[in-house]
Image (tube, rainbow over all chains, first blue to last red; front, side, top):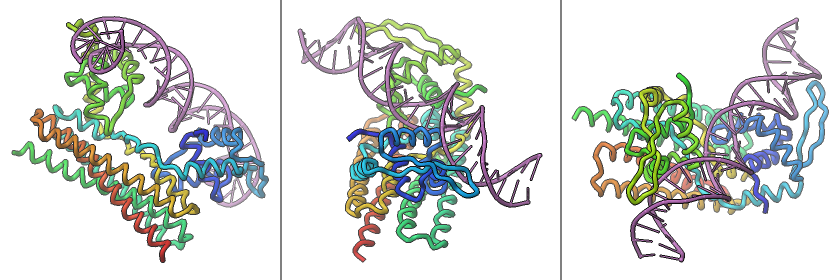
Length: 185
Length: 185
DNA sequence: TATTACATGTAATGTGTTACATGATTGC
DNA sequence: GCAATCATGTAACACATTACATGTAATA
């Protein structure tokens, strides 16, 4: 089966929900996926064009009361098959996640200790802010009575974010401690 | 101060070590950085060209016995300042790390449970393999008597990788358990 | 003589962001 | 009239990978 970009599969997946237009897709991403998957309009519209060219979806213009016209996309059988196929196959490999803090740390060997500690403290702070954001979203979902099934999967992704972030915070603390002790010894 | 790409800073940083040529840079990356920062030759050589154009380093051809000629790069004062400046400033923001497994999970709401569990089991397996790789490198460093200072910073980056990976494995286990229980209830 | 390690580079292609450009409709 | 929301799109640029292209020298 022909291969498409991850962005294409993401959009195909979103089209299985109530989101039918480019604008809707962007809204869904910004509301629910942005902590692990971001897509800009600069990708969304060209990808939707490709999806129609490849006959994975059909378009139709939909007039609305009190709002501008919009284009609604519906998956074709072929589109559903392509999505299904992607969902059924395991990922090829876990990508290397670039980490600028680790890069700086690696080159800090001959840098001032105080600067290295500052970098780590700053990173920890950013991570804690992120953790709080996740917790906030989690609370909002748990409080409001969302569709149970949907909410569960959403919570899984948040749980992932929280666990990873917490682990990174723990690393910061441990590394700060080790670097601090090293100099005082 | 003028901004450069992360790749440029990474190469500037590598040039402070014994690595002086494009080939050396690639070797260092593949040996020590590749678990959190990869760069291909297609980036290295054009970036080195840019670095010279920007007068961040100078080049000179070095003849070797028994090996082809090579180009050696040395940081200029300007190059050192640019690197220093980058090292002294905190990162702008933690980038969103795309996660294809979470993306699939998000769209699995109306998929078969067995397939979702397969995806998670596969992900866990890949993570465990990665964890073992990290542990292996760690052991190699600890066993061989590396330059103590250098080794310490290298171990920090490996510790980060291990902690993050362990957290992700924990998430897999927890999520597999929850999804399994849900269906049997 | 064939393979491996050493060594440098470009071209095509893929992927992604940001800035720009346009316009409808509602509510203040 | 103006701001906000809804809505679609393109162009320029930035970044990265892969495949291609070339060549030296040691060693098995």
